[in-house]
Image (tube, rainbow, N blue to C red; front, side, top):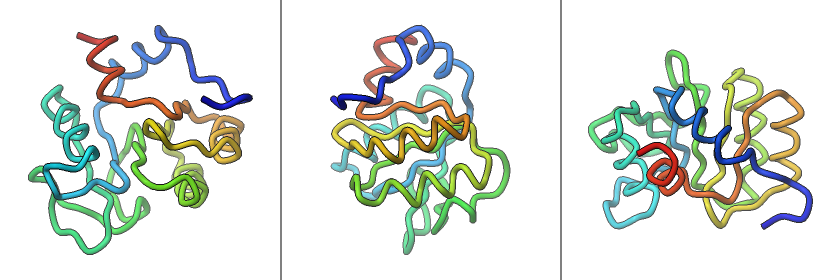
Amino acid sequence: MSMFFQNPNDEAIRQFLLSIHRIAVVGLSPKPDRPSFTVAKVMQQAGMQIVPVRPFTDTVLGETAYAHLSDVPGKVDLVNVFRAADQISPIVDEAIALQIPAIWIQQGIINEAAAERARAAGLFVVMDRCIKLDYLRLCL
């Protein structure tokens, strides 16, 4: 885990997860054997609306896919990111510009500068944690 960035505590994460309804999943793969697919499927089964954000893909998990966050119509509660650490910065910038209230950077992905920039802009930020595992551990 990072030396400087601190994730919110378990109770804050639990309250947040119980409050959200619509998750834009950046990098959501249409392949059922990929972690992004299995994580998004569990969140969908938990009652969340999943919005796939992946260029050159029509649908994932029965939902229309969009090439960019800025293409997603309507309100998004959370951006869940499955992209390499060096690709996090522009996603954070887009989330800030679109006034999306939260970003979750999946387990194994660390970009402290981008996470701190998102937090400084007022976003709820979780980094290097799995939303599925935290949801199952904290909310069920």
